[in-house]
Image 1 (cartoon, rainbow, N blue to C red):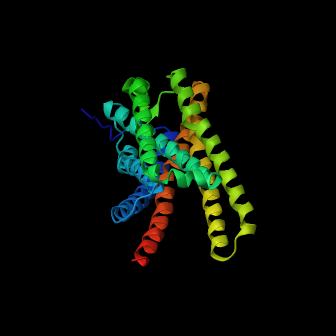
Image 2 (cartoon, rainbow, N blue to C red):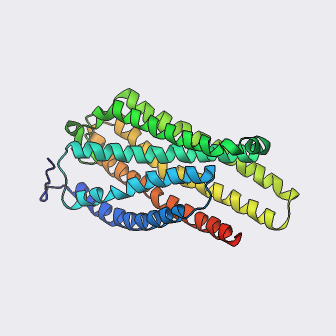
Length: 294
């Protein structure tokens, strides 16, 4: 049974965080829901799916799940939920959606690099590209579910200070912490940076061999990849710094870690809006081009 505490006794830091979350998460929910629903409708009207569409749809699913559970986080600022199994579920969902986005963006970066660096291999595997993309997306969710099932005990109610905050005195188990930091962030961010920079370099180098529309198109693609790379770094780096601080600092740094991690989690959540806005306009462009061909 879920219990609420609508008249909590809050210190100055908690009141400031509550006010920040009310102001910050509400527009993220509204904008994210609007664009994700609109993008879902565009996906339903697609006449032909490519491997990139499959990756983008997987990213949409992760973002949409994050958005539909966001009202609980907003409600928490008005009428806190006492730590319960619902909080464990919400935290598992939050981690699952974030890491699904991270792994999917990483897969997209690899796919872009292979397409640019090995065009003949990409053409040879064209008939199997959608099956490969689907398999990768299934693998991503399988890995995330296994990790959640194996480590949910670190998110049980007795380890929570508030519904969305772990007790600073209750450290994550070392293997779970390393899993989140290394497999969940460090390896993906290195792959994204390496693949993105190499792809951009190849595209820029190829500009001297093309003219007109192709040249403009390649410049636009390079700009999009650059923006995606920096968005990835900006959105997901702070939250993993916050997890590191939560793991290494003692109770004396409780307020600082609490504030830093809450702001970092909000920054990570804004990725749901940035993703949806990006592929909303991309899909509209694809749809318009497809419709003109008929």
